[in-house]
Length: 565
Image 1 (tube, rainbow, N blue to C red):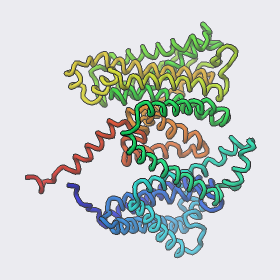
Image 2 (cartoon, helix red, strand yellow):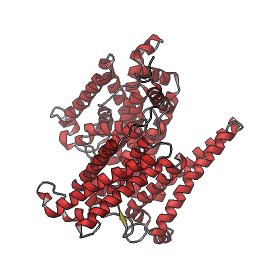
Image 3 (cartoon, rainbow, N blue to C red):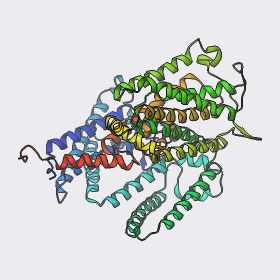
C-alpha cells in the first residue's frame, strides 16, 4: 500500500526557506531587474514580477501535492505556511537593502530591485505585510491546482504559458510581421505599446484553454471509438496529416521572414545532431561526450574541399564534398568505437570526452595550420547551389536543412524498429544478456557509433555551408553538452523528443537574445527541474515511461520493515 503523507510543518518551513532563497538568488544576480523591462500585460505585469511569483506558485503546488489529504485542506495550509515564510525572507531582503548598501557585495542590489520587490510602496510595514500576505496567497493559489482535475490543470497551465510567451515575443512578432497588412489590426487588438492588452490577454487565455480542453475531449472520444476505426481510415488520416504538415513546413520561410528562418535553421542543425546522438545514447545506451568531434570533422572536411580562399586545394562543389564529409565522420566514429568496445558508463564518457578534446587541439595546432587555418579558421566557403539556385540566405538554407532533417529522421525511424534497432535497445538494457541472446556486441556498437557520427558529419557540413566560414571555437565541449541536454529534455530514445528538445533548449534562447546573460542559468534550472519533475522528458519514448512508472510502483508497493513478515 501507498504510505500516507508525512509532510509536516517543519517540511513546509523548509520548503518556504528554499522558495525564499531561490527568489533572493534570482533577485541578487540581476534577473528581476533585467526582466522587469519587458511587460507581459501592458503597464500591469512584467516578466520580472513573473520570475518572482513563479517559484511561489510552483513550490506551493508541490508542497500541497505532497501534503494533501482526502479534502486537501492540510495541503493548502502547508502551502500558506510556505508562502508566508518565503514572503518574510523577501521582506527581510527589502529591509536590509533599504538600510544597508548591499552593492559592495551584490552589484545587482540596485534601488530598482527593491522598488520592484516592494511594488513601489514606501512604508516598510506595508511592504512587509504585502509581501507576506502576497506570498501566502500565491503559494495557496499554486496549491489549489492539486484540487483540480488533471485535464483542467493542464489547460490552465497551457493557457497561462501562452499569454506569457506571446507577451515575451511581442517585439519579435512586430519585427517579423510589422509590414504585413493583416498584422496591423491584430497588433492593435492584442497589443499595446508595451505588452499585451487586457482584452488580448483574455482572448489568448480563453482560446488556449478551450483548445487544450477540446484536445482532451477528442482524445477521450477517440479512445472509445478506436476499436471501431479501421486501419485504412487511420492510415488515411495519418497520410493527410503528413501532407498538410509538409506543405506548412515548405511555406514557413515565406511566412516568417529572415530572422525566424535563421533561428529555425540553427534549430534544424541541432535536430540533425540530436538524431545522431540519440542513436548512440538513446538507442544503444553509449554515453558519448565527444560528439562535437564528428561535427567538427564534417564541417572542416566541407571547408577544406570547397573553400576558394588561400587554403583552397581542390575547390569542389558542395554536393561533391558532402558525401566525403559524411564518410570521413563515419570512419572517425568507427575509429573511436574500436578502442572503447569493452568500456561502459563513466569510463566510456571520459574516453569520448578525450577524443573530442584531441580533435579540438589538433584543429588549433600549428601542424595543420597551413591546411585548415589554425585559430583563424577557414574562410570563403561557397554556398550550396542547385543549377542556378543558390542557398545563400536563411530562407534558402532552411530548405537545405529541412531536407537533412527529413533524411536523418527517416533513417532513424526505420532503424528504430528494425532488427538493428532492437539489438541496440537490448544492448542498452543489459549488454551481458544481449550477448547471451546472440547479439554481436562489437558490430552493434560500431554501427551505433558510425551512424551517429555520420549524422553529425552531415550537420557539420551543412553548418559550414550555411556560415561560409568556420572557426575552432565553434566546436567546444558545450556543443556536445547542448546536444545531450536536448535529448534528455525531449526524451531519451524518442525521435519527436529530439525535435521538442531542440526547440526548447536552442530555439527559445535564440528568440530571447536580450537575456543572453542569464541563458546558462535558465538552462541549468530547466535541466534540474526536468530531472526532478519529468525525468522521462517532454515527449518520452514509451519504453522509458514504462520503466520509470514500474520503478515508482515498486517503491510504492514495497512493504516497510514493520509490515514485512
